[in-house]
Image (cartoon, rainbow over all chains, first blue to last red; front, top):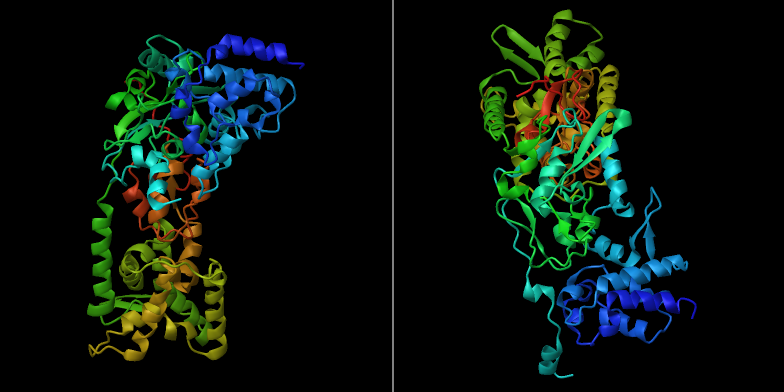
Length: 149
Length: 432
């Protein structure tokens, strides 16, 4: 595999080889609340397992559901940093040109957050048109500045 | 699967662990920091003191208030949490770590927060902030009621105060409306159509127009007397509609009780009333009498209580017929159909007064109390949602001053037309 070494480095840096599969990160994961189809595929434990088994994790759409929160890292008894793992995998995926699951800012073109998370937010805030969701935080502020100052 | 087993296997959700709080009553005086862009010099003192409180060092990147500097336009702007009435971050937070407490301050509960940053993405101006180093999410909590940024701002551009709505205009308006209702309908023999009190006689402008058209004679004293109401409207806006009109008072009373179902689309055009006006005047020229005045609800309600003190059944029947329109929208007659209002609207369009919404940085996109309470529905929700101060069409405004009365941040104001108010109210430059 072409990126095997990079994935290995990321896993080493975030301590994923020490994972004991206890499932505490799954217990606290906010994704269980956000997505009704939360499963082992999507959970941090599943992601680590898939990365360890060296399946083609970068092409996997399930790495794009995470919100990059800190809950899993906080409770991990083995000191695995889930957030760093996901961030590294996403960075690597973008480097390899897997960008179909990431939302691009309408005004500046920055790739700012995964589509699935943004879908969750727009579902939660449904009822009124929320155009600002299509822009990255920096551009929202810029637009607010232009309109008011 | 059996019934019991189903219960056993059912998953606990967040609703079981941390149920949504019940809808709270708004605090009477919501705390808010009001930002005045015309005074901000972009020095960044607010960022410094805020980050000092957040992370105990001067690091502007981790402050909850952000100063944006637009050097090319000579304006600076501070992005800060406005402590919305219905916070979007609270709705979006997957672990329900964000609370709006009774004092009106929206806070992140640190013990529940998992630092996912979804609140940052749900906020229209991204006021909650992910700190770049540790990944923690910071959000303004108004320093628990004594914000440092407002305290240390050298130019007084950030100003902290407890919002307070005026609240007394409605106690003035309802009595004025009731008194003018009594005067025009019950006590005086002359009605609104031809208001007579001793030597003073003021005819209704729409009636006068029809009268001129039907008789084809121009009586200058009559026109001059009809101009009184027009001039009043030119000076103060359509205060006749909001404060004096007896039928408007009746509609206001009815409208407070009736539920609203919306109107069919063909009625929802504010040009209809001009059409009715033109039709009435044209009809008067053709027919030789005032066609609208026979069905005018304002005239009907005035004439119904006639000199003999007897309700005239046929004329009074028009009033409830028009009042059923109130089931559609508030004051739907005045919005779309009333030709008396149309004459006044023409005068108010070039009038001296204007209403300014959002003169200061108010919580436009979440508060919307002005848009909720406006009986004419002229406050643009779309603009408020985008954070822009909406322009008020003065020909549609009936000057009831409900928005001025209701706004808790005193950013709905009455100004002269030539006064410059948007975006910020510019005060005299004084060092305190």
